[in-house]
Amino acid sequence: MGRRVAVVTGANRGIGLGIVKGLCQQFDGDVILTARDEVRGRAAVKHLEKEGLLAKFHQLDVTDHDSIMRLRDFLQENYGGLNILVNNAGVAFLESSTPFAEQAVQTVQVNYFGTLETSAILFPLLKPHSRVCNVSSMAATDALRKCSPELQAKLSDPGISMEELSGYMTQFVQLAQENKHREHGFPDDAYGFSKIGMTVMSILQQRQLDRQGLDDVVVNGCSPGYVATDMTHWKGHLSVEEGVITPLYCALLPANITSPRGTIIRQKQEVDWVHFHRL
Image 1 (cartoon, rainbow, N blue to C red):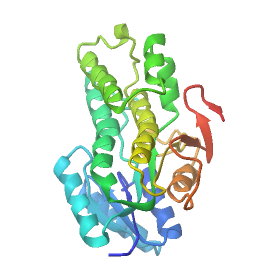
Image 2 (tube, rainbow, N blue to C red):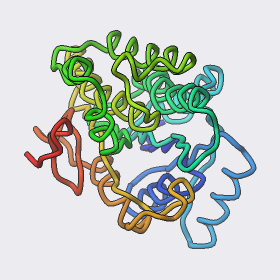
Image 3 (cartoon, helix red, strand yellow):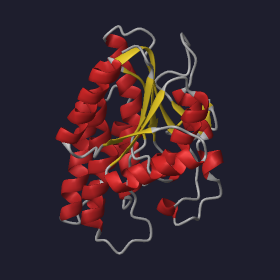
């Protein structure tokens, strides 16, 4: 029950698999590779075994409440809690012919609401000195700039609540179904808008955990950079090995740190995500 454990969502390929690999090399504890598809997830674990790295597999679909609950029960029964959570699961419709309305539904559901529910269910398991890394993107900044000034102000307001944030995510999806999102100040960028949600969520989650008085539990959002994976059609200028540096930095932050906490990290540095300037 006392063994430490790290969980990475959406980890059968790309950045997620790279994060699992890094944790296997650097984290003193078990590493759980999760994936929606069990066959692909177990194949990824086998791939790591050939490199001499030991990870465990557990099925997880972040859009399936029962799937998240099964993971929670597994962690509680086998580890008595959770030490590291990397929320990496995500989708993107880059260069896709999928109608924008459908892109909006799937992207926001997985990237924002899936991460939000996974966190809500797993956060009660977080042990003292736990670390949470939400893999976001500076695409959030680009999408924010495409919003109307009024919406920009609302989304970047330090006083925004999680309920208000979720409301904007839902409104975007609903308006996209009628192709009215632009006239209401929302961008033509489902991925970027979902990452606005994930970015602001990261900041708000730290505030919520602090209000609960948890012992050195730290949440940060991060941007791995433009990484060459199948999600980006291999157009990124960073390798997976380069892209996982910042997520691993966030996941492995030492105990009792005062910063970074509840912020956005790029290249292992805090950034002002609204203006994309380093602090």
